[in-house]
Image: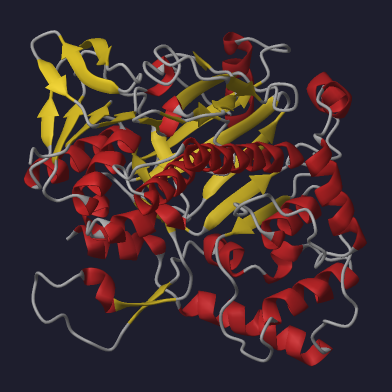
Length: 497
């Protein structure tokens, strides 16, 4: 029996994730990544959710390898700065609070306390406490590593799930090195054409120098969307009617490595600016609505805000949206090929992870009926749409210092599911009727954090509150644990040795 031929078109992070996961699931298959050095990848600093750390564990890549090779740092959440125009920030953390097991749902009870007393949720946020003192959510265990090959992460006691920040170009290079170590083939060539069989499945790729047989193809060609869009002509669902951002200017700012383990999303007059710490520099950029300003004006606003000159090598434009059918025949679009929204909650690789998880759970080579393929695509579409809806909610603030913010709610009408979700939260934060058809990407906690952060009404359950002295102990315990953790820089330095 011939080996299965799994081909990945594209050598960015999503492409190598697909290749490594495919080799993990099908160790006897031939896995080939076709990626031309003449094309390259988008590249930039990038943030993730904890799901990327789950991916690393699944394919047995130690996180310290990213620290050493990809300038990686840790991430416990995102700080949203000045989204109400009041100079204040709110924090969206990854994990529940540590230190109190007084109730089965002590975090939910603490949230009710804060909502009842009209306080910001950041008041009791462990992630925010860590970032204010530049600590990572780790303490050293009282143990010595058995040998130099032992995973250094075993040295730590962990108090929060984490994501990572990394240099995307270095990460793609490192995943390629890992892939080649594991007998994944890399072909540096340009794709000229695809040959389809009578059913429409891709049976081979025509390259400039050779032809590759294909049993299953991952389209990871980024914004080119060479197969899912250009070959198969899948239907595109645009989110532009309620997510109007369509341009961004990236730039870099050096730092001394003593940084908070967080991504910063700072609201600007016509959009927002990201700041992602990797070793040695921040990867930054301004995402804006080009109906109001151009790239030169965006750079001027950046410089006025930061107080120094920046160099932006380029601008890039995008159309927020996704394909309704990322799986067509024997081809699955992953990463930017499947869709794109602004990186406001670092969802790109999270969506990639969930897409691959569902695909490999279903089986690449299983006999799939049209009904099963339709269900898979509906699940992907539901996931992408929910992300877009959640991002829209971030803009429903009271900021009004520019025409962009003053006109946002009238020009960019909220989708009905967003209205329904916010109405439920205003009634009671524990109310949760409007579940998506499949899995929820962002649960109640995330919607509550953002709604509370931008000043939208959030109701509470008066019967599920902590007594005042327990609530005080909850905050004090979290603060004491944060104080006892190791500085983020020290953790990174230790793992880099």
